[in-house]
Length: 77
Image 1 (tube, helix red, strand yellow):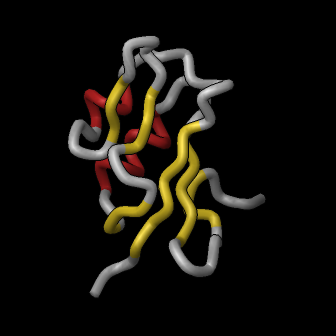
Image 2: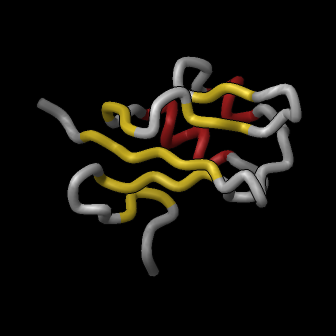
């Protein structure tokens, strides 16, 4: 079994660019206010989800390992 991730979007930061939905449409959706939401708060590790987080123009998406809470993105410095 692969890694599981906790995916979150900081709606106070999200500008509704839709890049996450275009990059990982199975993982993100936009509401009527164009705010991004993960489809599920926990998901299997997925390259498209990571690409969406890395490509978010305002870094509103965070990914952590489910269970341990260790950051996946953004990485701790």
